[in-house]
Length: 486
Image (tube, rainbow, N blue to C red; front, side):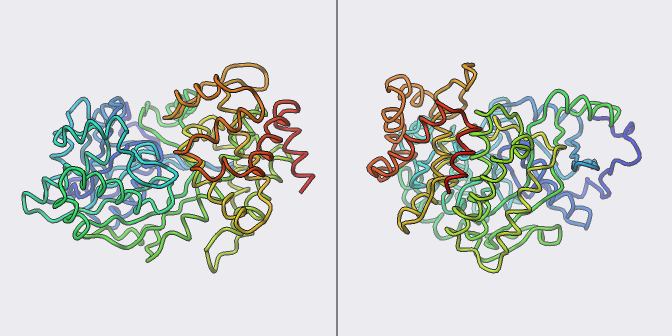
């Protein structure tokens, strides 16, 4: 457990009176990224006199919440570069709840407190119970089916937020804003879609109320926050003089772009490094396609090539070149961003990837691919198809995913696939022969690929060619061959 009194002098402690914080935000998804990103920004604001505190919620895992409670809602954040590290204690959390342990009613009650003005979330794409290809609610999702039958005892994120909105409306309380901080294009629009569409199936008057009174600001978030390992925890415990099971590590870089559209006020995040804008979409697209798209490209092909970390991929000249060319030649042309030096942005991303102090595992990035591919790679593929331009590196990334979900690496060892559509992936892999049949089977997943890509003979042929190259020659050689052919 984190022991404040034993911390070294160079560890920054909260320099404000935590008793003055109010629980004005509820955040769902107390994961590593939130702890190293949004909570940090609000913690910096508290140093300037802000009273905006967080109630942190995990719907499933309760271990982190319990550990957080045991150390007075404090945890450490360490920023790591190749040649330096700094640690600070984050103190902006006022309370914490576990959906299963404390009960969903306790979570709804917390969201229904008069002071709460913002409900935010980092639950990854799969938490929205939507079709990634369209952004619409998936009414057949088991949790949505349950919530339609039991609206006051929800299981899903949309159902939970909807229950709290209903309770606030019925109590005459002001509406809160719902702010997604997940990596999805127009994440505010997607969040609004799934919640309004669920409301329309439950109570049309409530859907009308939401459309008139509740706001869903979009955001773009950027910071590399690798999953903690046993070795990382051990190093930190030695440095701090006590263990911290809630600790996180992150790169020094931080960016948060927020649509300034809040129903009942917000913290002055811009005074702590965030950017408040009228339109987040150009920033979202830039980050999702250039950073997240290249990350997914490196994750699948790097993992297949035997590289454990993104920094290891950067030591491979072909992968490094491919990632940079993917960003500048096949992602940058698709963007609507104006006034940004995209070459400088790409070079800054490569420099961040080279940070060997950040152990960002390719396997970690490779999870939940069915939820990530549409916005990271497939939207750009469609842009190039419409414009008649080359998208081979994008398709190579998709082919890498297709090899990866086959469940066996290049050494013949099994890959544990972590994906909400894991069962369907396994069925399609098992039922299809290798090569073109495998490619067509996976393209048949309409929730991921829509219908257009499977019907495009050029796309099928290119994916099949890359898939076969990956099987016959391996990822390292295939990436080198494709880069040389461009």
